[in-house]
Image (cartoon, rainbow, N blue to C red; front, side):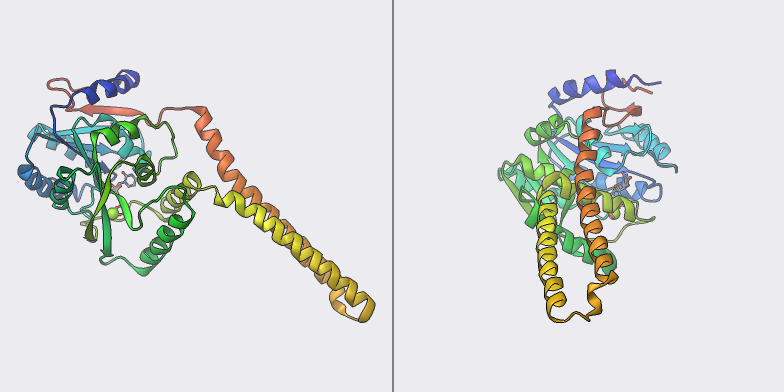
Length: 334
Ligand code: UDP
Ligand code: MG
């Protein structure tokens, strides 16, 4: 068994080690069909980078052969390091683990399904040389993704932009390059509901975009199920905006206005058209349901925030590690 505390303590030590120039951080969840092709394409890019590179693969509790393939890649190529989380912790946490262990002066985060073209890293590095500390990839087009994915994503990013306290650029995912100074700040952020693209925007520094067309997945199914996507979207909204909380005040005020209006209406009907059937049970029922709904929605919104406070207060570690290899020469922990 692996001593997690010892491994986590190593994070700081790793960060001090800056002889490495580039770290590529890639979360992997059941990607056995893609890993070989991913490695092939990335190694071509690694050859073209002007310094030493480490390729950090994070196994996020895969149930297929992903971890075995990672071990093979590590045996074959010393630049490949991997972390294996003790269960599926989700994409954002897997990326966080990779960032914690990264040692390069420049860190690139990308998906493991080849939807993010590795060749774009070269353009990102070019921007970094121009003096930008964060270079994020911005999608101009999503190829071969259905409207049921494209449309909600399109709307979500635009709504979030209006509501969020920080300026989160639209149509950007987690595919980005970050300078060590940004990674250090990100690593020091303790929150467990991590919406990395939001945190990245919050950190600041000089940021810029490179545009790209998002390819379809190389192989396998989407690992972000509808539920996981919804949770991520909710996280983004709740972590970066207090507007939903204000919404309950507005809803309450609206309900109050409607009831005052209705009171006058009922009074009018009683005085001037006593035969109106609308003053009966129906209107009472509607009022009860309406108020009930307003209250439940408000409690639900409040619950989202309170639930997050509860999560944070527990202060559990973000992830548990089952296996680590390649981060120190001749020191593979298993
Ligand atoms: N992923 C992960 N843990 C999860 C879900 C996904 O590490 O619980 C990884 C997955 O292997 C891939 C990346 O996150 O490398 C993006 O996942 P996916 O392609 O399914 O998401 P989408 O492209 O729809 O954003
Ligand atoms: Mg994908």
